[in-house]
Image (cartoon, rainbow, N blue to C red; front, side, top):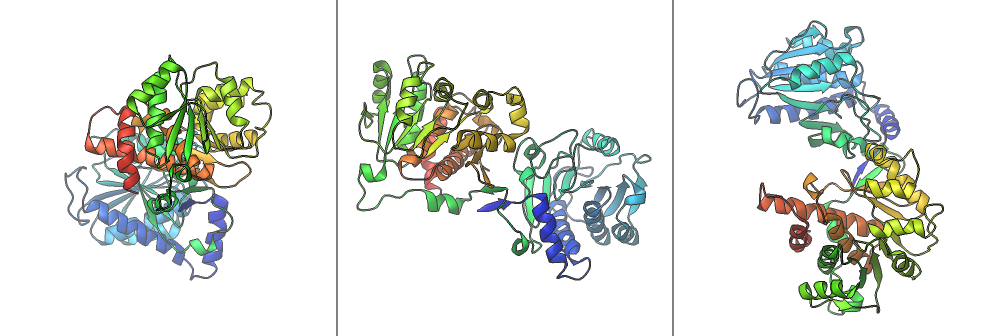
Length: 494
């Protein structure tokens, strides 16, 4: 399980570790990892002022350094590169407050130093963003923004490496409140920071690299974020045994689709069948039933014995009775799409759902805004404050919530740690993609997974299926049916 910790947790862990180490040792651990990553990048960069750079010697490196330890990390790393023959220049945003020891090391190694107001861009292969670290709040200040505007305007643009995190993003929340560095690579130290995984900040990170500096034993309290990795997916996925039958594997009840949206029923059913359940029992209008059976003759039609319900995908506006019936059972229930709209008609969102049984809601930002029913929580505000939004939804409704969108986040009510999904692609923003996710997550609920795990595994496999399609068919427009066909391969791969 990958974990990410808050700024306060990192600060306390650093203090505890530094008390056990010689002065400056912790910074040099970070610098060593950062330098190694820069050496690797300079050995294979295919763009820049001089085409392919095959070695550090002669490479042009620019450091944009703010005050504090983040600037110190960048300056020390640049000094090490200079000693290996790189031509290094540092732009100081505030010379009086620059990290003194790091600056001295760079100068001793032969690096040039310029003040931001006097600096002009010259062809460069690699830029180190050492403007501000995890304590930064708000966007880039004008001097830093002006420097990176010059860099961004060049052609070819140099490779930008962020030190610990891209300057201008919020380390704790993933919010971006102004100009921010768009990194190609981010080298982070000690533990991951939540903002590296949550949009809109995640869009500034580029490729993420981790440097272990020995912080883990000193991190206290629950992480802010956790992400399932392939080994976790493999451990959670249900596997049939010799004693399995369709009921032991799980039967999912699925109320989806309508004459207006018949495709939602087919997509959700297909994904559910590929989730590993023993059977899917479909409940819908006669013409929708016929369409599902024509594609999937193994589906059971009509009410009967099930282990979980999915209700809502494409079901249409008149779905209140069906949602209420599902919620009245003592079974796990996933509510999506039109089913979420029905919650308001059932007396929500004025109070938490009155259920003691597992419940999973899967809204996108527009549906989340309607659920919260608060002028402050617009879809745009939710997209910009995704971590706060998913926690608010989970606490408000008293159940597990999967918030779809640029970053998929999953929260249980009253818990500190939110689960983030790290697979996927913007191509998933296509009609029917959410129906596939609902069917997949519902099948995992029926197989016995806790809603948090069912949502996490489903989001991971859903995103991996999209990536698999893009890898096999580069340039082809992704459609939801591609995901259904790819889910078997994505499941087997884990």
